[in-house]
Image (cartoon, rainbow, N blue to C red):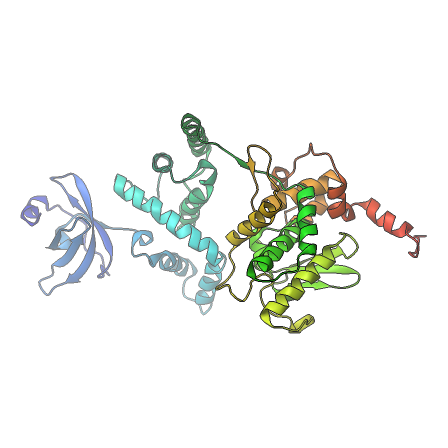
Length: 444
């Protein structure tokens, strides 16, 4: 490689100030008509800069005589994701005593989990573009379509899960001041085509496809009754009681798995009048200081207070706590002393499978139950007994303007007594029935 150096000199760009050690550059080789990526090393007293190429070659170059490009900040070291954005923001904001605070404010807009999901996905696209010899920043829609084909070829991602990858590409482009290339009709068609080809391949291979189905209230009722009858002795029985309690709790609160597993003991309080649940961790609300609170009438769901109190007593006994209330109550609502680390949302799936499996509650043919089935079941059952759509939106944390809730509802479901048991309290007639009971005041 070094023998060819003199043969590829070009009237290159003037050397850039700050061509610091560690930067990544592309150097042009006329004989190969190709660009080779390398990392800048130290510049010696002779003015030659050491370049270590990704293919293993190394050479010392007079960069003033080379045709080269410094790669965008986005494709430098792994840690440059934040640094590139911060540098751009500082340039836009200019010299001010508030610049650093404004930069910090911009960076805080995305939660850590979101950034952690986007970074590897954007970098995977960057690596693909480099391997294809295509520009990554800004990328073209054609590069994105090729990337979708690459993902189809790898077979590790389903088309239904492609959106986070496309969002990562768009978000980083827009943060760096470029239009997002991973949107529009051509991209939508590419993803749809990817989905169709994956379905055809699965059918040809005879693979069985199942869909996540909603959890019927009759299964929840069976789990509920089983939990109330449990007198836990040993770890297995205690974990089963937890699983039963979680299924019922997630069902009546329209709960997301990540919200449910993050519950702390102090987030749930019970009085003679109602059950109060503070939703400590909700998707899309990490920037809101005040958490939402759901209030369920104590008489609204028969046996719910008893089940929660049963679990709380067992949970407290496991931790060696005396039953306490108010500000003295501490700790995860679900974690047990023999478990290590923070509970993850995926564990909710195991609890649902444990409780339903113990009672032989099976999904319909072609379907499967997961931790999200409780949320779908709650929405379907509440609507079936007559709960207003806006009330379902509030309970489930959907925007009143969102159409997403409709994907959670099976409008053909016929209501039954189990649905009424869990969600009858959400309807106007339940309040009327309560007022007609002996000993209650009648409205004027």
